[in-house]
Image 1 (cartoon, rainbow, N blue to C red):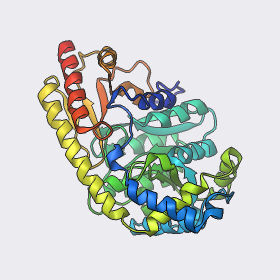
Image 2: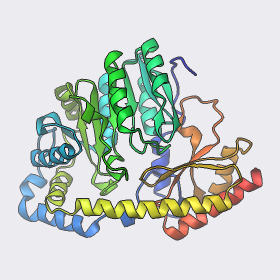
Image 3: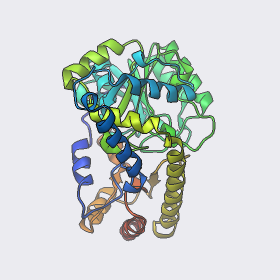
Image 4: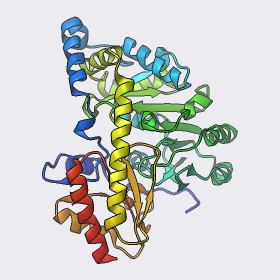
Length: 388
């Protein structure tokens, strides 16, 4: 569909998160990293240091913008990736979800046109759908992301208020836009007066050398930037980041109304973790583990899924976008797998068109153990072959 329209979100984050807590399920669905990916010993030392060295700070109220010294450390990391930002231009959030929600809440007005990727992260679609906007889906054409010629044509015609994009290891497709495409996208948005909301939650899991965030091609007038450390350190610490651009004060005000501030203890402990060093070596470990798991999953899919199955190969991360023959009823396959205590993410959850025929699924290669990954994918493959 090439015209904007209102939509009802096809999936709810609440349902996915409740499913993620089921200990009896081989969960190939939830976008969560493995417990093997969490640097538990280093985090324990960081929390101990927070209690021993700064207990009053860690257990008290503080500014809605977040721990200032933590913002300084994150600004230094962003500078290494080409983003020039001061601590005052940054707000610490409760995960990337709050950052996304806050920016959408800040910008979106009912009936306005807002662009997003297709497929796109279901929680983003839920936020957009509930805001009453008219969505303009931009198809992800291949592992390099959206078609910029189509973006230019549609943006010139419909002038969307903003474009939500996950340019690095896009969830769910795994697509990653090259640097030259990122620069061109900023210019398209500048020309059409379209803000760009960059979700960079998977940015530091990319295995491509020299890849730069979209925000690094802008001064903040066009691009707002959100990320978190849920995929790289630990989901439970809930430390996210928002660089709103020219909307920092209003964003902080809305956040303050919502929760006053994020968890002080987690912010101080995470600062201690960054100060101790070791994060970069941890990232290298993660990349190796993710690469191993992705390759394992790809080989199992090749052996056990129906012929003509296509796997998009991402340049990092732990998610695989898998396209199966269109003759297969994905919903029926999902229910059959669930009856055998295996879950995967149905592709339809990542699109805004409720009647779309989507013969795809998202597979998490990290959350299950290696044995569970093998067992789960073999089970799904057998079900798909029976219905192929």
